[in-house]
Amino acid sequence: MPLQLPTMEPCHFCECALAGTQGWNFVARDEQVLTLLNGRQYEVGQCIVLPVRHAPTLLELNDEECGAVMRAARRVAAAMVEAFAPDGVLVYQNNGEAVGQEVPHFHLHVVPRRLAGGWGSGPPRLAEVMAADRPESTDYARITDGKLAAIAQLQRRLKSG
Figure (cartoon, helix red, strand yellow):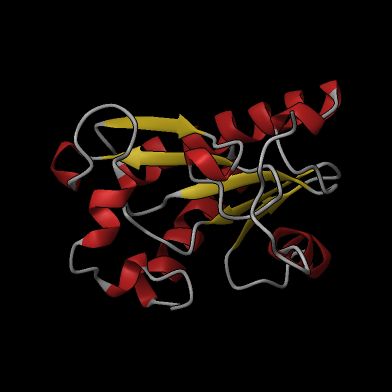
């Protein structure tokens, strides 16, 4: 039985891939992978890595895309450690609505975590975080100075690395 996926037409991440380097949250791109600052900044510098080609879940990625996504995730994680000196880096991914997938396009979350960030240890408790009074940084539709500054820091480190 296939996974139940969210409905989104057109696919937001396909639109981001088409925008190329023009999107406000662009961090890096190669032929196969796009790295974006996540519009919901539960932690400063939180990014998502996605294949340029539309693939709804991990199960639809080909081997080359799997490798490209992980290489990009490793690269941006290294840039995060240098830029933000987090306490740790969380990498997670959701497949299907039942586990919180919101966009029907594979994407890997790469998050520089802080012990005082309010997520607790282990995987994020997003339902709890989202139910609380949310600062503007967690609103994906709001472009903030903090989000733009995080992009600039990551881009500088990715270019030098």
